[in-house]
Image 1 (cartoon, rainbow, N blue to C red):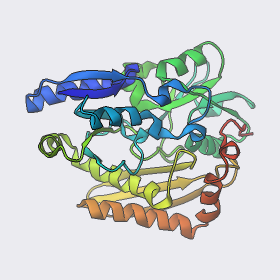
Image 2 (tube, rainbow, N blue to C red):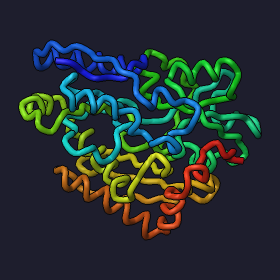
Image 3 (tube, rainbow, N blue to C red):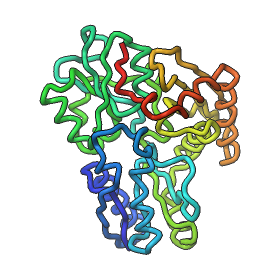
Image 4 (tube, rainbow, N blue to C red):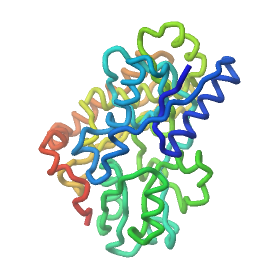
Length: 319
């Protein structure tokens, strides 16, 4: 049995982590099939211009379809909200720290940055939220794997960069985190910090075995988060954040939507909460949050995300 995985250091860590769980909990001996995806190859353009996050999973799904691998491990935030026909998420593991990390050689927090400081990020979601926090900064696109981004920072290309805290922790680089953004300031994207295991839908026996690895509270939370984007027709060109947190038996879902063409436009926000015990209840919570955004004026914002890709380029400085 083989796991299809990207060949970045973080992706390999994630695949090896699942490999260890499969051996420890299920007694399965599993190898790795390393692959380079289109998302890894195209580094000179932002994702919204070249096909979105699905570029990180397409080749892995092809390996599953052709029988060259049996499962694929993904950062769930990179997995499109609607999988292609014939594929399913068999398991979602317990979430790591979902927050975004402020990484800088010279500055401890975002507030310490001088006016006009250059901040790198790969995400429109982060662009619009950085604009809300510090409209005086110069926010520039930053592509490449985690090590490449850190190297660009260390080489002086940026005053600070924003990365997912989970990836840094998984690679033993937590010391690089100068500070963390609390969700109230920088809301994470759907699925951030969670790992998903994808299989062919017709692999019934394997799906049943993998289901035992699912962390149910994380599964329900990310179902609600992903339902928001699905309901709004979300894509890589939509600056959308969705993050659910448990408060006892209640799941509180917060969402933020920015304007793809005008990074400094006011952010739209909504909060929905409710008792969630089943998958349909989790998805319904996400759909209510999406409707709350629509009621708050999201239609114009959503239209901006479907405009030509050049208009939604996060290289537009957030000043």
